[in-house]
Amino acid sequence: MCGIIAYVGRQQALPILINGLKRLEYRGYDSAGVAVMNPNLTIYKKKGKVINLEEHALNNKIDSTIGMGHTRWATHGEPCDRNSHPHLSNKKDLAIIHNGIIENYATLKQELLSKGHVFESDTDSEVLIHFIEDIQENLGCALEEAVRIALTRVTGAYAIVVMSQKNPDMLIAARKSSPLIVGVGKDEFFLASDATPIIQYTKQVVYLKDYEVAVIKNGKLTITDLQNNIHDAYIKELDIELAAIEKGNFEHYMLKEIFEQPKTILDCLRGRLLAEEGKVRLGGLREYIDQLCNAKRIIIIACGTSLNAGMVARYLFQEICRIPVEVEYASEFRYGSPVVRDGDVVIAISQSGETADTLVAIEKAKEMGAIILGICNVVGSSIPRASHAGVYTHAGAEIGVASTKAFTAQLTVLYLIALQVAKEKGTLDNDRFRLLLNELDKIPAKVQTILDNSYLTQSLASLYLDAQNMIYLGRGYNFPIALEGALKIKEISYIHAEGYPAAEMKHGPIALIDEEMPVVFIATKDHTYEKIVSNIQEVKARKGKVIAIVTEGDEMVKSLADHVFEIPETDEILTPLLSVIPLQLFAYYTGVLRGCNVDQPRNLAKSVTVE
Ligand code: F6R
Image (cartoon, rainbow, N blue to C red; front, top):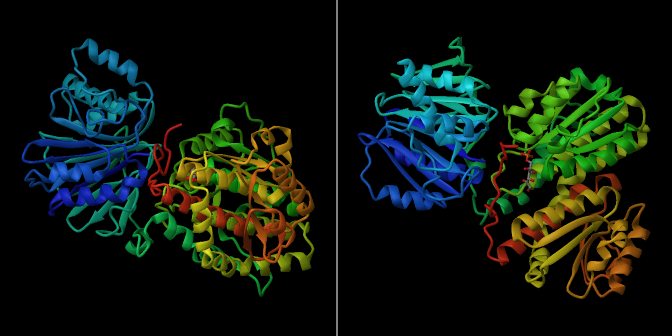
């Protein structure tokens, strides 16, 4: 969604803001803007990428040691200069940047219009700063008090920073359901949506909680709630290095992140998979493992790629733990009159830990008495905080907007959980348990083998550049991988693609098949292999072009398909960790060859903090 950065201290603010916005750009790239004191409250904003703003702002001589910046993913109002943040109040002496949605903005706007306020944008955020100004004028109170009062009257989600002409060294920030952290340096403070823009300056951070207001004034940070009760500022140390958020020698973050997977899977397994001892140890679940083992049902809620990981987990938990599993789009769960019964456990999966749809679904499930276990990548984010317990995926910062390494890390955690539960429940015999542990242990090296052959996916991509549509088909554990392959190609290359269970093809999608239609089969050696070979034959009989992901040494599919990509053999259950890799690479190279911005695909944002 939108990205926020603000600074107050002794350094020049503008370079910190511009660099920060470049790091945050993955959160939204419709427009960017900054506010500084130069010496008056001055705003520079531009539609499009941060680079446009940089050229625009740097043409001016700016001398300011305080400022705030915003990169936008449009919700209210088209992307244009006028709708870019920061927004000014009616008297132009207050400015705001905002991430989230003010749901009752239309009512507030009507109220303010009747009082003579004039609005320059179509945004809900501009309404909020006018509202704050109106409260301050009416009550004659301090700005921070006006902010607190305004926030008790708005509904929706917000992370905001406010600057004031009359208080030129003050920043006021607040959050509800949108992330915001305070970076604490020596004689300086930062505010940011996530750690990426501030780790080069400080690793000391305070995670603001919902309904907290932070005021930075005279070199001092004060945190209160909306009723002005003082809260302690708990400083935490960030566990992330600058190199982890840089591209290094890779052309794109997405490629870097795909290639990091042997390491990220290993990091995820480290200390948890004890292959020699024949054990799985997940500290984060210790207190809830009994509930999980005794669960009558597991409900998995997530969105997008995280949902696809959840769909793999359905097969897994049902097969090896014998627990019924339902997988729900988080956005549909909340409003679908869910039935949560005693003994149900909800697993929420999210890379960012900030996805609004997932958070709202968690709240609903919690209200209904469910135990929530979170599987998240971003430490300290909202979903782990809203969960009773959980497991971090430890994939490191994922900057490419299309999720890759976070997906395989989510799968890895799900395998570990399922194995531990199966062992404790006794639904998996000891030999099979040991075998799966050993196989899981070998996965990072096998992923590396696939990456070593990435050039094959590049040449394949060059053959299908002009495709208008694609179909991805798989069965069992590979069905969610077909969904994930189709999602990746859609996001990255803008080729329309659909993922289906391979057997379902004959119930409709087969009508689409002709000589123009590439069909990607995930046809590894498993218990449905013969059936999927028949499905390949059905496509070939209709002159479709078949690209198949197969197990090393497969001759049968090779003789039928137009192209094959071999992956190392592993246990059928673990195949998704390998079969998804060539599909990620294929999407990446197709996008690059089609001239798409693969790290920042159009209309997308890395973390979607609105419903
Ligand atoms: C796809 C992608 C999205 C996310 C989805 C959920 O490549 O990145 O579909 O998977 O928005 O995000 P998280 O996992 O952060 O909750």
